[in-house]
Length: 203
Image (cartoon, rainbow, N blue to C red; front, side, top):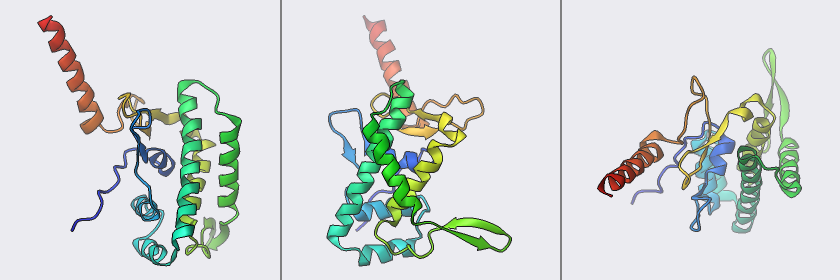
């Protein structure tokens, strides 16, 4: 029996991939792609935040109640981040409540990193908390915190397909990328335009 489909990662940044786990966000029929803790671990592994072995250990040791709590907190992070990022794209100010949620999540993540010496340099590490149920949440929160205050935040765009609007970092040469994925949304929009022109010609 085959496992679940891999996540489609087109965003170019873990924080944006998290936002994209609520598919069809602007429709009446949204699809949550991380409904369970195991799904969250799969996402963390695909994003290379967790190793496969770390994910297996967490999947075996984290209890159901704790797993549900972490997923709920991750969804809270995702939705607050979405409000802020889509608000920036649409030219609206995010509610203060969403900023408070992000600040809370970012502080929680920051409290669990350690500054370690690696040969001749320093680096942040999650050493000592790898087995905590919250580790995928904290890693995603830290990634979001780093992105929001970086110059890369200016490169965040949404897919040109209004039924999709997945987020991505536009690192194309002239910053002209329009689609989360050309093979899916880009071709779909081309097909729609072709159909509309054909209908006009018939009329």
